[in-house]
Image (cartoon, rainbow, N blue to C red; front, top):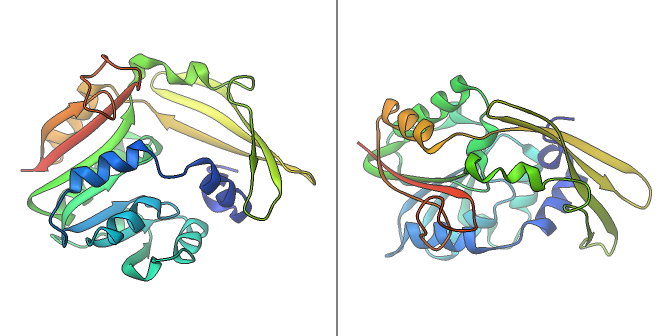
Length: 245
């Protein structure tokens, strides 16, 4: 199943264990900054980790995601009542409603086609006030991260909240142009599940061009979570902060 980690409730629980609060969340939280009360859109909010952190910091947060299973998990967490949760994609975004929009956990890379990406950027531009900021992460293709996604290096055993265990690993199945196809394997005691996915790896130049076409001005792009220049650190990221022009 395509992107099963976001649509299968059993795999959503695994995702939550695999992806606790980390330095990426610290980066985006500090980017939104202070004082409280900023109207923030978390586009592709998943199970709500960052959205809940932003709301706890006093911001007015809307979490939007097309995966109902992820939103169900988000709504069940402590503090969920502080966030407005909306099921859907770019088509549900209101106009000029937010001061900041974020796309985290490499959501940008799940927008595979040029049309999907351009449509999302246009909708995000419309959703932001003039001068509002958009921040997102996308892996730098020059880092060739997918070469480390293999059944040996990626294999790990996780303990779930219900006390059960699952063994997970990743297998890249094809690399063509900027597209990386891979399968995620989940071995539970009673069965093995799998989910297929495709990510788009865009270069810095591609990101800059698409942002300009959608009405954004790039403010800065970092290569790592501590503000390193692109290509200078070990993180292999393109951390983009742009302004709605």
